Length: 589
Image 1 (cartoon, rainbow, N blue to C red):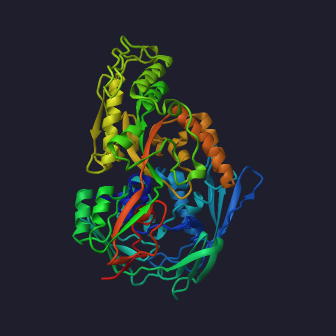
Image 2: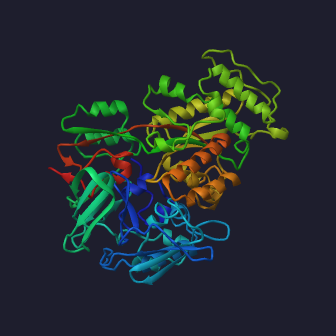
């Protein structure tokens, strides 16, 4: 119920990397490694084996030499070879691509860690060199899963960044069974099965800590491989596709989409937020409807712009963080449908969750009056002044706001009303509700802030576009997170500033955090990565570039009488992990 921004994979990763665009994106890219679902186990994709260790070259660089399985082809008949990795890397580097390219194809130079060269040893062996001995987040879950695309089609457009991002993609080659058929912007999009494809069939066996793949369809290279711990209970499913056409129909909002589902027009609704609980329960009473509930691997958050005042002032951010009573909103307004989230790690990743420290810990459990008083103390300690600091009458009443507020050194507040951009209630009632309350709490502290309901794509364009990076004060959005929780580096390392094409929207710049992010990138074990991640989290609790708000269970429904899924229990749900798994769903109608 939000229109995809592009069908061009380069544009998607560089600029228009919202979930809606990703759902409809055809399989235009492939990679060395990937992860199996629903168990999130690392497996080989185009690599003939999992190469997880590097060779020290003795000159401050390390090289991973990876064999590529022979016999795979793009849908245009071009072989998938090591040259695809070389060409893609050089294109990302030479054209200065940004966005997700910077977090996957991490480019190394004198100032930052990353890839320094990609060389085709021969057609089916690629050597990737980095300027540090990368760990899990720098190799297995990053560069080894970085996307590659074929020069056979895209080479004609790769003359400059603008031309490449604007190139037509309706006939772009894919490494999958579906190709674009009809693209009706604002209405619907369809994939059709490629009758000449090699990307079909096989069986996947899922264990708790491992995955086995048996694939021999007579066209693609035969595979019989196991990864991880393949012991204990398991289940096996057959890979599709089982349908000839996949249609993505665009609706105006959630309500319209689920009304279409209720009327039998669609079998599944792609919704990154999941269906609202009352609607989920209502739809369960419809004949043939099956309910699904999964833990979320994501978060909703509010960001400050640290490049401009007052967001640049830590005392201001901490004062706002203190006065915001998330539990009040969750329990008294949202009736418990959301789960409080203070740090960067979802509750389901319990071993990664850091203890809450700093202002959030100090203000936890305080009354509205005590929160107001504590927030005023934080401002005063931070060098703020006021002609009148106001007061709180106690109970549920609003505070009498301070007047004549000035920042440290007498810095004047903006003369304009500061806007807090958030999706409206039709898109996400949770963020909409939080935005109204948080804007009001900031007003009670004496700041002229108003919540502004804004379209999802409009917010994305405003805060993720480099030229707009200083043109906003606050916004609320959400993140769906990856298979390895290295997102704090992507969101907060200074090298990833949105102004430079990254995902650090607040413009957070802390050399100590950057140093820890580099340590994290070199961590070789999960336990080591978890310990460093918690140190990074402690800095974020102190500096508060985000106020992390909540997560929610992912509630979904599908028409169980008409479609059959190979599995439904998966962290983050069917939408976020597989866009509804169109290549594996069976249709019984």
